[in-house]
Image 1 (cartoon, rainbow, N blue to C red):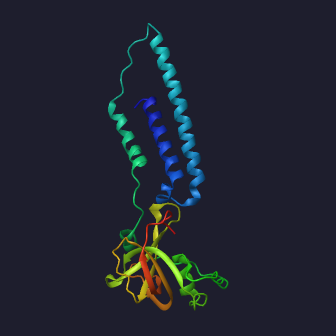
Image 2 (image 1 turned 90 degrees about the vertical axis):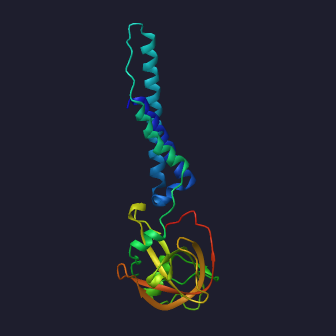
Image 3 (image 1 turned 180 degrees about the vertical axis):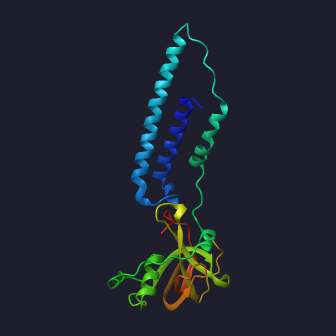
Length: 238
């Protein structure tokens, strides 16, 4: 593959990175904190590609102006096929990790706090992340949750015996290291949504603590008071 082809691929790849970062698509691959690094990488790729294309076209013009210049050989056209994955990245948004990934990996648990958990903000239901709820429920025995209605958002995954659980994937760096945080569901009404369905659950603290059969991690439970299906959030990972 000649340098002109390489430059075009670089240009498209840099454009794909910029587009994914600006539109938020990058959140399906990596954590939000990497946004500035992705923007910088995409900008450098585009700048390098533009400079290479300019130099190559300039050299090509000089070659044509030289009557003594011979005919350069053509690079195999198969090199242009490398553009296809980049075009796919530009046009197709991959799905976020979901129920299948959650079912294959054991639930993680937030680290125990060295101090008391702060009180929840006023107003019910109070939106709470699954990690925060699980930590308060397991390590604080639900002291900061008692008497409050909380709202958890996640996707449905299959738990022990086929029972539904609420889950969210947690990234350390990128989707490749994603692991789930799972919260069990009890109470009435029963959440009967299909796996991978995103739901919003309003409920209260449940003293029940289960075990994830995949890795024996402790799993907090919430007593469901109401639930409804919802759309996948812009930031699907916890």
